[in-house]
Image 1: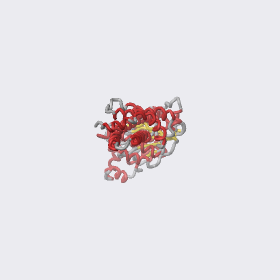
Image 2: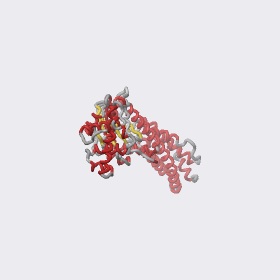
Image 3: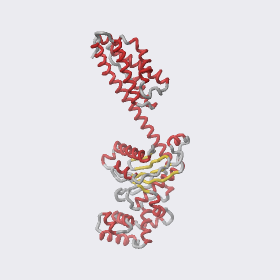
Image 4: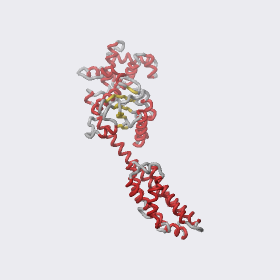
Length: 415
């Protein structure tokens, strides 16, 4: 709605004060905003002053009835994107616009004479209505730019994490110093529960990974570099802190399912690939040995880790379980029986079976494989065969750096 003649006349009387008012804004008015005084002088005296003059002239143009034109907000958007890139807090940027509006209102109030009260109220309404579109444009552009910058930074961090895990640290160690990875670090391997249906959509996967990132950052009290996808991956923690025992539980809470994780220490960037492979191997072994999803450490699976190393006898040992191929219920029973220290009742309870059913399955396993599960040697042989057969590479060095060894696609709740 156009301004009345009285309101337009009052506004345009202030047009000669635009330059002086812009200088006042960038000086005394904005100077009361916390953090403004610390800004660079050239930003305040040149860029912010130019933006203030643009806003004042835009108001005068609209007061004449010329209305808004395409590009009126272009400078506001350009400055908002620039401030976002420079890291200026959004609240400081918006407060300069709000205080600028107040300074203009105060000037109009000072200029108004007796009998112009109605014109002043009309200008106040006009000013506030138009300021809303400016604030909206500034906030939208700032947040869009910050989102783009944050996405770019996250991708740079993921790229660096993948490079370190693959054994290709950057030539310039400045980035490592900035992230605290020039020295010792903790390397985590994570295996996430499988997702079904809508949970596999890209948006759902990104939401899950963001939640995981938040849990990891809070758990270690620092920015954790992650190279994760829908199935898992690795994370690098600066300073080599040990993970808390409840880490897997906290991760499982945001993943809506059990999570396996393992940690290994790297003394420096060059040790990260080996630590990543070790952590991944610990997860594979814990899975193969029938351990429930939790935080796994090498010390927890020392014997199994040793037994799973490959040599010329490995194919023959792994082949002992070939008769169980196509019989997952027998393989699950064997794995669970070994994990429960050969307690038939505990095995039955874990599998939801009657103890006699467990006995029958164990007898069938012994008949098919020729392994005497009642003897220490037979027990060790069965464990070794499970570890060697369960998707392991021929040797740890044959695993591509940064990639976990293959693990059969089995339910995480009962590996």
